[in-house]
Amino acid sequence: MARTRKRRMMNQINVVPYIDVTLVLLVIFMVTAPMTNPGAVDLPSVGQALRSTAAPLVVTVKKNGEAEIEGNILPRDQLLVEVKQQIKEAPRAVVVAADEKTEYGKVVAIMDLLKQAQVEKVGLLFTPAP
Image (cartoon, rainbow, N blue to C red; front, side):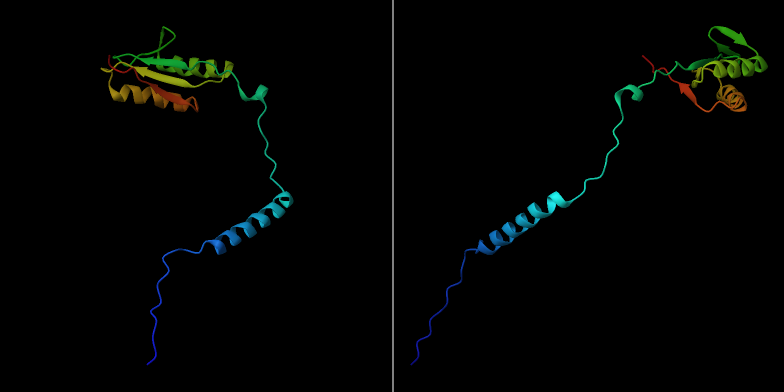
């Protein structure tokens, strides 16, 4: 009778082939790394990065719909002229501020006037409740 031996299963992983592959890849990267041409990066210089921006022009809308610039209450046609003049002198943003009791339509009317004056940067000023 022939005797049959049972083969035992190996329960260990042979890591030698993995080490061989890793070393070959390491050599390939070490040889090819000096040949690569890194892209040129244009970094900004320190002197030209910062410019001081002017404070925005604040247009305050009152409850009755009147507009105020720097404490001067102006009629609508005068407001348009004043905004154009101040932006022409120093280009800056315009901020519309209003009381919480001011009607929304009155604020939109002032913003429409600013659009007619071709103001590109218009913002809304919001003061959070205490």
